[in-house]
Image (cartoon, rainbow, N blue to C red; front, side, top):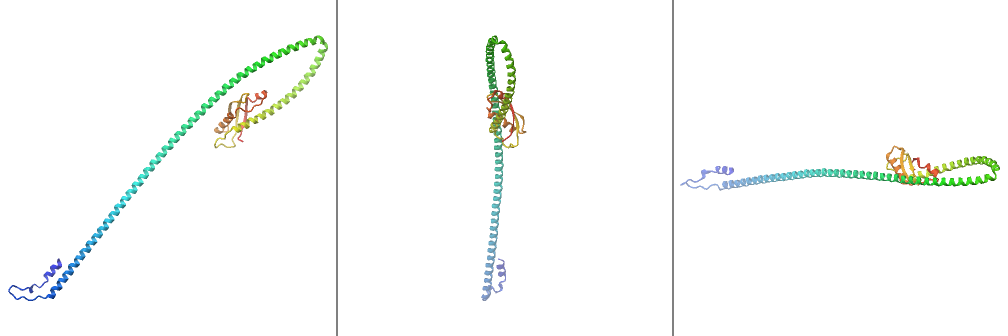
Length: 302
Protein backbone atom coordinates (compact mmCIF):
# COMPACT_ATOMS: atom_id res chain seq x y z
CA UNK A 1 0.00 0.00 0.00
CA UNK A 2 2.90 2.32 0.69
CA UNK A 3 4.36 1.55 -2.68
CA UNK A 4 1.01 2.25 -4.29
CA UNK A 5 0.85 5.63 -2.60
CA UNK A 6 4.36 6.51 -3.81
CA UNK A 7 3.49 5.56 -7.31
CA UNK A 8 0.32 7.61 -7.19
CA UNK A 9 2.13 10.72 -6.03
CA UNK A 10 4.90 10.22 -8.57
CA UNK A 11 2.47 10.49 -11.48
CA UNK A 12 2.66 13.54 -13.72
CA UNK A 13 -0.63 15.19 -12.88
CA UNK A 14 0.19 18.23 -15.07
CA UNK A 15 -0.37 16.06 -18.06
CA UNK A 16 -4.03 15.77 -17.15
CA UNK A 17 -6.19 17.84 -19.55
CA UNK A 18 -7.98 20.64 -17.91
CA UNK A 19 -11.56 21.31 -18.87
CA UNK A 20 -11.77 23.19 -22.04
CA UNK A 21 -8.16 22.66 -22.86
CA UNK A 22 -6.85 20.55 -25.57
CA UNK A 23 -6.20 16.96 -24.50
CA UNK A 24 -2.73 15.65 -25.06
CA UNK A 25 -1.81 12.03 -25.39
CA UNK A 26 -0.10 10.67 -22.30
CA UNK A 27 3.10 8.71 -22.61
CA UNK A 28 1.83 5.14 -22.71
CA UNK A 29 5.25 3.66 -22.19
CA UNK A 30 5.75 5.22 -18.75
CA UNK A 31 2.36 4.13 -17.41
CA UNK A 32 2.88 0.49 -18.43
CA UNK A 33 6.29 0.34 -16.77
CA UNK A 34 4.97 1.71 -13.52
CA UNK A 35 2.06 -0.74 -13.37
CA UNK A 36 4.36 -3.77 -13.86
CA UNK A 37 6.57 -2.59 -11.06
CA UNK A 38 3.58 -2.15 -8.89
CA UNK A 39 2.33 -5.67 -9.67
CA UNK A 40 5.74 -7.12 -9.10
CA UNK A 41 6.09 -5.35 -5.79
CA UNK A 42 2.65 -6.39 -4.68
CA UNK A 43 3.35 -9.97 -5.68
CA UNK A 44 6.68 -9.92 -3.88
CA UNK A 45 5.08 -8.53 -0.75
CA UNK A 46 2.41 -11.23 -0.86
CA UNK A 47 5.09 -13.92 -1.21
CA UNK A 48 7.00 -12.47 1.73
CA UNK A 49 3.83 -12.40 3.80
CA UNK A 50 2.99 -16.00 2.86
CA UNK A 51 6.54 -17.17 3.66
CA UNK A 52 6.36 -15.37 6.98
CA UNK A 53 3.02 -16.98 7.74
CA UNK A 54 4.38 -20.40 6.73
CA UNK A 55 7.45 -19.85 8.92
CA UNK A 56 5.27 -18.82 11.85
CA UNK A 57 2.99 -21.82 11.29
CA UNK A 58 6.01 -24.14 11.10
CA UNK A 59 7.42 -22.63 14.27
CA UNK A 60 4.05 -22.95 15.97
CA UNK A 61 3.81 -26.56 14.82
CA UNK A 62 7.30 -27.30 16.20
CA UNK A 63 6.36 -25.67 19.50
CA UNK A 64 3.20 -27.78 19.68
CA UNK A 65 5.17 -30.94 18.90
CA UNK A 66 7.73 -30.00 21.55
CA UNK A 67 4.94 -29.36 24.05
CA UNK A 68 3.28 -32.68 23.21
CA UNK A 69 6.65 -34.47 23.55
CA UNK A 70 7.29 -32.76 26.88
CA UNK A 71 3.79 -33.66 28.08
CA UNK A 72 4.28 -37.26 26.96
CA UNK A 73 7.67 -37.39 28.68
CA UNK A 74 6.13 -35.90 31.84
CA UNK A 75 3.35 -38.48 31.78
CA UNK A 76 5.90 -41.30 31.22
CA UNK A 77 7.99 -40.03 34.13
CA UNK A 78 4.89 -39.81 36.34
CA UNK A 79 3.94 -43.36 35.29
CA UNK A 80 7.50 -44.59 35.99
CA UNK A 81 7.49 -42.97 39.43
CA UNK A 82 4.00 -44.38 40.14
CA UNK A 83 5.12 -47.87 39.01
CA UNK A 84 8.26 -47.63 41.14
CA UNK A 85 6.23 -46.49 44.14
CA UNK A 86 3.71 -49.28 43.58
CA UNK A 87 6.51 -51.87 43.33
CA UNK A 88 8.12 -50.51 46.51
CA UNK A 89 4.77 -50.72 48.31
CA UNK A 90 4.26 -54.26 47.01
CA UNK A 91 7.78 -55.22 48.17
CA UNK A 92 7.11 -53.76 51.63
CA UNK A 93 3.81 -55.65 51.82
CA UNK A 94 5.52 -58.84 50.61
CA UNK A 95 8.27 -58.52 53.23
CA UNK A 96 5.70 -57.87 55.94
CA UNK A 97 3.69 -60.91 54.84
CA UNK A 98 6.85 -63.04 54.72
CA UNK A 99 7.89 -61.86 58.19
CA UNK A 100 4.42 -62.60 59.51
CA UNK A 101 4.49 -66.05 57.89
CA UNK A 102 7.91 -66.82 59.39
CA UNK A 103 6.78 -65.62 62.82
CA UNK A 104 3.69 -67.82 62.65
CA UNK A 105 5.77 -70.79 61.49
CA UNK A 106 8.24 -70.23 64.34
CA UNK A 107 5.41 -69.99 66.84
CA UNK A 108 3.86 -73.22 65.55
CA UNK A 109 7.25 -74.99 65.65
CA UNK A 110 7.84 -73.87 69.24
CA UNK A 111 4.36 -75.00 70.24
CA UNK A 112 4.91 -78.37 68.57
CA UNK A 113 8.29 -78.77 70.24
CA UNK A 114 6.79 -77.93 73.63
CA UNK A 115 3.94 -80.41 73.10
CA UNK A 116 6.39 -83.16 72.08
CA UNK A 117 8.56 -82.46 75.12
CA UNK A 118 5.51 -82.64 77.40
CA UNK A 119 4.41 -85.87 75.75
CA UNK A 120 7.86 -87.35 76.19
CA UNK A 121 7.99 -86.26 79.84
CA UNK A 122 4.61 -87.88 80.57
CA UNK A 123 5.68 -91.06 78.78
CA UNK A 124 8.89 -91.20 80.81
CA UNK A 125 6.95 -90.66 84.05
CA UNK A 126 4.50 -93.40 83.08
CA UNK A 127 7.33 -95.78 82.19
CA UNK A 128 9.11 -95.01 85.46
CA UNK A 129 5.93 -95.57 87.46
CA UNK A 130 5.28 -98.84 85.65
CA UNK A 131 8.86 -99.96 86.28
CA UNK A 132 8.57 -99.16 89.97
CA UNK A 133 5.30 -101.06 90.26
CA UNK A 134 6.83 -104.00 88.42
CA UNK A 135 9.81 -103.85 90.74
CA UNK A 136 7.58 -103.93 93.83
CA UNK A 137 5.53 -106.79 92.43
CA UNK A 138 8.59 -108.86 91.58
CA UNK A 139 10.22 -108.00 94.91
CA UNK A 140 7.15 -109.24 96.75
CA UNK A 141 7.06 -112.38 94.65
CA UNK A 142 10.76 -112.94 95.30
CA UNK A 143 10.27 -112.44 99.04
CA UNK A 144 7.45 -115.02 99.14
CA UNK A 145 9.51 -117.43 97.08
CA UNK A 146 12.47 -117.12 99.40
CA UNK A 147 10.27 -117.60 102.46
CA UNK A 148 8.80 -120.74 100.92
CA UNK A 149 12.24 -122.03 100.03
CA UNK A 150 13.45 -121.30 103.54
CA UNK A 151 10.48 -123.12 105.09
CA UNK A 152 11.04 -126.16 102.87
CA UNK A 153 14.78 -126.13 103.55
CA UNK A 154 14.22 -125.99 107.29
CA UNK A 155 11.68 -128.85 107.12
CA UNK A 156 14.08 -130.92 105.00
CA UNK A 157 16.91 -130.11 107.32
CA UNK A 158 14.84 -131.16 110.32
CA UNK A 159 13.80 -134.41 108.64
CA UNK A 160 17.36 -135.28 107.66
CA UNK A 161 18.56 -134.41 111.12
CA UNK A 162 15.99 -136.68 112.70
CA UNK A 163 16.93 -139.55 110.37
CA UNK A 164 20.60 -139.00 110.98
CA UNK A 165 20.08 -138.87 114.72
CA UNK A 166 18.06 -142.09 114.67
CA UNK A 167 20.60 -143.89 112.52
CA UNK A 168 23.42 -142.62 114.57
CA UNK A 169 21.76 -143.77 117.76
CA UNK A 170 21.28 -147.25 116.36
CA UNK A 171 24.87 -147.51 115.15
CA UNK A 172 26.10 -146.06 118.39
CA UNK A 173 24.55 -148.94 120.28
CA UNK A 174 26.36 -151.55 118.12
CA UNK A 175 29.83 -150.09 117.89
CA UNK A 176 30.15 -147.21 120.26
CA UNK A 177 33.84 -147.43 121.00
CA UNK A 178 35.13 -148.29 117.51
CA UNK A 179 32.78 -145.86 115.89
CA UNK A 180 33.93 -143.12 118.20
CA UNK A 181 37.58 -143.73 117.30
CA UNK A 182 36.94 -144.01 113.59
CA UNK A 183 34.59 -141.05 113.71
CA UNK A 184 37.26 -138.85 115.18
CA UNK A 185 39.88 -139.98 112.68
CA UNK A 186 37.49 -139.71 109.76
CA UNK A 187 36.30 -136.37 110.97
CA UNK A 188 39.81 -134.97 111.07
CA UNK A 189 40.64 -136.37 107.66
CA UNK A 190 37.34 -135.21 106.23
CA UNK A 191 37.75 -131.73 107.59
CA UNK A 192 41.16 -131.46 106.03
CA UNK A 193 39.91 -132.76 102.68
CA UNK A 194 36.80 -130.63 102.89
CA UNK A 195 38.81 -127.55 103.63
CA UNK A 196 41.11 -128.26 100.67
CA UNK A 197 38.21 -129.04 98.39
CA UNK A 198 36.29 -126.00 99.51
CA UNK A 199 39.34 -123.82 98.88
CA UNK A 200 39.80 -125.32 95.43
CA UNK A 201 36.11 -125.03 94.54
CA UNK A 202 35.98 -121.50 95.92
CA UNK A 203 38.91 -120.50 93.71
CA UNK A 204 37.32 -122.15 90.68
CA UNK A 205 33.98 -120.60 91.53
CA UNK A 206 35.51 -117.15 91.92
CA UNK A 207 37.36 -117.49 88.61
CA UNK A 208 34.24 -118.72 86.82
CA UNK A 209 32.16 -115.94 88.37
CA UNK A 210 34.67 -113.32 87.25
CA UNK A 211 34.69 -114.69 83.70
CA UNK A 212 30.92 -114.67 83.67
CA UNK A 213 30.82 -111.12 85.04
CA UNK A 214 33.23 -109.92 82.36
CA UNK A 215 31.38 -111.82 79.64
CA UNK A 216 27.91 -110.54 80.51
CA UNK A 217 29.26 -107.05 81.16
CA UNK A 218 30.53 -107.03 77.58
CA UNK A 219 27.16 -108.38 76.33
CA UNK A 220 25.37 -105.52 78.08
CA UNK A 221 27.72 -102.89 76.65
CA UNK A 222 27.27 -104.30 73.14
CA UNK A 223 23.46 -104.37 73.39
CA UNK A 224 23.34 -100.80 74.69
CA UNK A 225 25.73 -99.79 71.89
CA UNK A 226 23.38 -101.32 69.28
CA UNK A 227 20.39 -99.51 70.78
CA UNK A 228 22.16 -96.15 70.90
CA UNK A 229 21.24 -93.37 68.43
CA UNK A 230 23.91 -90.73 67.98
CA UNK A 231 22.60 -87.17 68.61
CA UNK A 232 23.14 -84.70 65.80
CA UNK A 233 26.40 -82.79 66.14
CA UNK A 234 27.87 -84.98 68.91
CA UNK A 235 31.57 -85.89 68.79
CA UNK A 236 32.73 -89.49 68.52
CA UNK A 237 35.27 -88.75 71.28
CA UNK A 238 32.58 -88.27 73.94
CA UNK A 239 32.11 -90.81 76.75
CA UNK A 240 30.24 -91.05 80.04
CA UNK A 241 29.74 -93.47 82.94
CA UNK A 242 26.23 -94.81 83.49
CA UNK A 243 24.85 -96.67 86.51
CA UNK A 244 22.14 -99.24 85.72
CA UNK A 245 19.83 -101.01 88.13
CA UNK A 246 18.38 -104.36 87.06
CA UNK A 247 16.03 -107.01 88.34
CA UNK A 248 16.78 -110.75 87.96
CA UNK A 249 14.94 -110.89 84.64
CA UNK A 250 17.32 -108.30 83.18
CA UNK A 251 14.69 -105.53 83.03
CA UNK A 252 16.13 -102.03 83.52
CA UNK A 253 14.46 -100.21 86.39
CA UNK A 254 16.76 -97.21 86.49
CA UNK A 255 19.61 -95.64 84.53
CA UNK A 256 21.54 -92.58 85.65
CA UNK A 257 24.65 -90.79 84.41
CA UNK A 258 27.21 -90.73 87.23
CA UNK A 259 29.96 -89.15 85.12
CA UNK A 260 28.72 -86.78 82.45
CA UNK A 261 30.30 -86.38 79.04
CA UNK A 262 29.70 -82.63 79.27
CA UNK A 263 27.09 -82.90 76.51
CA UNK A 264 23.52 -83.16 77.91
CA UNK A 265 22.13 -84.48 74.61
CA UNK A 266 24.78 -87.22 74.51
CA UNK A 267 24.06 -88.17 78.16
CA UNK A 268 20.29 -88.37 77.52
CA UNK A 269 20.88 -90.50 74.43
CA UNK A 270 22.90 -93.01 76.50
CA UNK A 271 20.16 -93.23 79.16
CA UNK A 272 17.58 -93.73 76.41
CA UNK A 273 19.74 -96.47 74.83
CA UNK A 274 19.91 -98.36 78.15
CA UNK A 275 16.10 -98.33 78.52
CA UNK A 276 15.68 -99.23 74.86
CA UNK A 277 18.05 -102.23 75.23
CA UNK A 278 16.00 -103.59 78.19
CA UNK A 279 15.83 -106.46 79.06
CA UNK A 280 19.62 -106.72 79.24
CA UNK A 281 21.42 -110.09 79.13
CA UNK A 282 22.08 -111.38 82.67
CA UNK A 283 23.86 -114.53 83.88
CA UNK A 284 21.67 -117.49 84.92
CA UNK A 285 23.73 -117.94 88.08
CA UNK A 286 21.88 -116.27 90.95
CA UNK A 287 25.00 -115.51 92.93
CA UNK A 288 26.60 -113.82 89.92
CA UNK A 289 23.31 -112.07 89.13
CA UNK A 290 23.39 -110.38 92.54
CA UNK A 291 26.41 -108.43 91.30
CA UNK A 292 24.38 -107.28 88.25
CA UNK A 293 21.55 -105.72 90.19
CA UNK A 294 23.52 -102.49 90.15
CA UNK A 295 26.41 -102.06 87.75
CA UNK A 296 28.41 -99.25 86.26
CA UNK A 297 30.17 -99.13 82.95
CA UNK A 298 31.77 -96.54 80.70
CA UNK A 299 29.92 -95.87 77.44
CA UNK A 300 32.03 -94.97 74.42
CA UNK A 301 30.62 -94.75 70.86
CA UNK A 302 31.86 -97.63 68.78
